[in-house]
Every structure is written in structure tokens, then in C-alpha cells.
Image 1: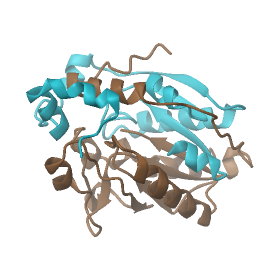
Image 2: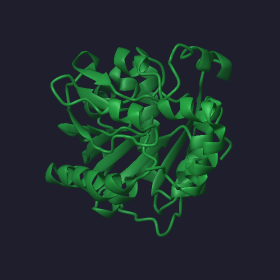
Image 3: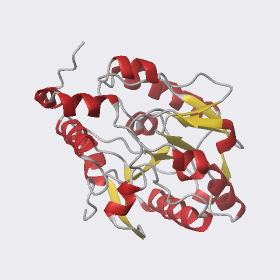
Image 4: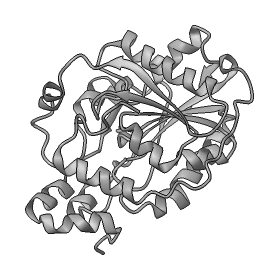
Length: 117
Length: 166
């Protein structure tokens, strides 16, 4: 999606918690952040923290001069990975996650691109 | 990059991410230089958190429950000034409570407006956008959704976009 918007004449930057994977797609500008999924800007009700992340992302947008411009943002999530995951332990697995746990022989279908009709 | 993309994700999500990454083919990357200084730019936000206003159609979760390989490829418009009270997050692969408690965690419109009043950006766009990020088969996203979003942004003379995948 980012490439389509960029190709239409609008400068773009992605704030990504999975920068290696975003980079595989090949994007114009990328700001990587080691924050948990569901909370890309940071914690609720922390406007200063959120604003700092957004501002740093906009600086990446401003400083890039060529495509595939990737910067690792310096923000550190204040919990351990286990604590961060634990905050969401009541969320049920997604339908695909439940299916793959029940029928793990389907996992190769993810890789083959063969999406069952 | 030193960031561990898998640090916070569970086993199934990791499988989905790895498989998706293995199927990407980068090709030529487009690049549009900023046409004016950032402090004069109109900036729009695009989230993949599946945000829809309560007066709009929800993203289709029943469809995904019936067919776990499918994800809703449509998008929603989120006008500037929309808050967490006006929306729900329709995404079966994340924890919606954070964005539903404070919308800026996934779509930082208020933070963007603050940065505009500080002179960092020109102004926030009047319109922002959300898709739902679980899409294994991207055809409709690429052929319909993304071009429609881009056209809407161009109509509003948006200069720059921050994408916030969730």
C-alpha cells in the first residue's frame, strides 16, 4: 500500500515494529521501533511518549533522500516481552491461529501462497 | 536492523509473518521527494488496525471466522477529531483494547495536531484512513483499496503520509 501511495506522488514513511519484514517488501522510508504489536505509538494516555515516536518518524520522512531509507528508532519498551504479551493474554487466538494450531499440516500452505478457496 | 521483529508475537503469528515475508518480491521502490518543507506539509495517517466509526460499516469479522484464510480488504475513512469514543477496532489478530482506550496509540491524530501547533508539520489532513492488516491475498487491496486511498489523499492535497501498521 505504501508503494502505491508513494507512486501516486505523495511522500510516505512507515512506522514498523517488524522492520526486517517491512524491508522485504521494499518501501521508500521506514522507521523501525521495538514496540509490541497493538501499540505502535506506545502506551495509552502517554501523549509525550506517543508524540516523541511520531515526531521521530516524521524526521525519518524528512531526512530520506533515496528509497529503502531505514532508520532504527531508539525508543525502548518499558516492560519485558513476556510482560507485554501477558497484557493481552485474554485475547482469543485469531481464526487462522486456531486453525493452524488444530491442523498444523496446513502451515506450508501459508508459504506456498496456495490459499484454500 | 537490530530490532527483533518477532519479539512480542506468538507462534501462529510468527508463522504467518515468516510465510508472508518469504513471498515478497521487492522490485523497484518508488520515491517521491517531499515537495516542500515538512513544516508546511499536510500530513495524513493510515492505520491497519481495522478502525471503523460507529456510524460506519464494521470490518467483516464474521467472514474471517467462516474463512480464516480471508481478511477484509476494504478501508474506512476516519475524520480528524474522531476519538476512541466514536470507533471500534475490528481486528482479530491484535488486542483492540489499547486503541479503544486511546485511539492515538494506533492512529495518532491528536499527536499530529499537536505537532502542527508546534510547527513541526503544516497541518493534519482532515481525513485519515484505516485498513485491516490481516490480508493473505492482496489482490483487492492492491487493485482497489490502495488506489482509492491514494486518490482520496490527492484530492485533499495531502503532501505526506505516515503509515502505522499494527
